Length: 482
Ligand code: PNW
Image 1 (cartoon, protein in one colour):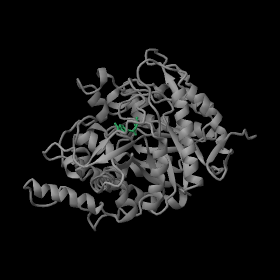
Image 2 (cartoon, rainbow, N blue to C red):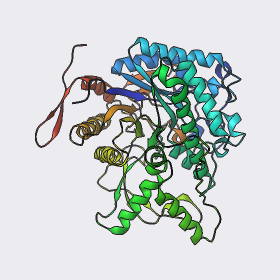
Image 3 (cartoon, rainbow, N blue to C red):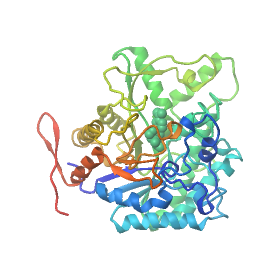
Image 4 (cartoon, rainbow, N blue to C red):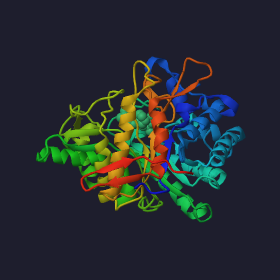
C-alpha cells in the first residue's frame, strides 16, 4: 500500500516554463545567453517566453488542481531573485512572484518542493568563472540562505542542485548545455566538485540556522539510469557496469551517502588513464578539503531522477582525454526496450524498481523521493497519448512493488512534467507534459493529455490499496472520500 502521506507530484523548472526572461528586473542567466547564440538549440528555440508561467502561474495552478496533486516541484530562478547572483541586490518582484506561487499552492493544500538550482546560473556569476570557480560554493550558499530565510517558513522540502551530473557533463564536457564549454576530461570534474561543495555548504547552513525552526528537509537531485552488464555473467561487462555506476550515480551519491569522498573506483580509473596517456602530477579529480564543511551526511533524503536503462560494456572512448575514456565503459540499448519520443529514452519501468533496490542496498536504506520520471512525445501531437498513460501505470506499479516487495522507503513520486516545456537543447520539439501547451498561441493555452486525465484517477493512489497476492503486486483503484 502506498503510505497515506505519499507525495504525488509533478515537476517543472524555472527556465523551462517561466519565460519573462527580462521581466521586472530579472538578470540574464546562462541559458538566456546560450539560447541566443546561433546553432545551440533546436531551430534556435529559446525560453524567452516558454509557457509564460511568469504571467500565467494561475493557469498552472489550475492544472495542478485538476490533477489532484499533493505536491508540486518547482525551481527558483536565481537571476530572477538576485539579478547579479549576489545577495546585496534583491529583486523584490522576483520575491513577490515566488511568494505568490508558494502561498497559492498552500492555499490549495499542495505542498511545494523547491529546487534552488536547475541549470540556470546567473550570467554575472558565469562571467566570474561559473561552476569552475571555487568561489561559487560560497555564492551559492549565500543564495541558499537567502531562500531559506525568505521562503523556508512555508517550504519544507528543498533540493539544492538538480542533476549535478548533467550540469557538469553536458555543460562543461560535451558543451551541449549552457554554458556550452567543451573541456573534456577536466572541467566536468571540477564543476561536479564545486557543486558538491556548494550543496554541502547549503545543507550545513540549513542544518545550523534553519532546521530547528523550519523543520524541513534538504537534499540534491541525482539523476541515474539503471545499468546492467551487456552480457549477464561476463566479467568485463560486469566490471564496466561497476565503473559506469561509479562515474554517474556514485560520483555524487558516494560522497554524500557513503564516505564523504568519491568512489575509489572513479579515482583509480581516472588516475590510471592519466598515467596511460603520460600525464603525471595531481589527479584530475579534485579532493575535498578537511577545512571545509563535510560532504558526508548532507542529504536528508535521496532525491532520484530516473528516466531510462542501459546495458554496459567496456570501451567507447575517443582515445583522447575525456570522461568516457576515463570510465572505459559505454552503453548499449537493449533492442527489446522501446524508444518513445526522444532518442535517449528507452522505456524501462522495471529498471526503476531495480534501481530503487540498488539505492536501498548501497546507500543504507534512505527515504527516497522520485523527483523526476517521465515519457516524451515528438512529432505530431497526440492528445490521446495512450502509450504515455500506459507508461505511468506500469511505472507506478513498479514503484508499488519496490515499496511492498523490496521494502524500499519510497516517499513520493513526481512526474516530469506538469507541462510541455522548453526541453533544453531540443527546444519545444520534445514534449514531456501531462498538459499540452500550444506554443503557437499567444495565450499558451494548456490542454490536458489523456495521460493527465488518467493521472487524475491515480489521485486515488493516495488512499488506494496495493493488493498483494502471493505472486504479484497489483494496483487497485478506489476513490476515497476526502
Ligand atoms: C532532466 N539526457 O534532464 C532535467 O532535470 C529536466 O530539466 C529535463 O527536462 C528532463 O530530465 C527530461 O530530459 C535531462 O539527454 C536532460 O540523457 C537530458 C538527459 C537526461 C536528463
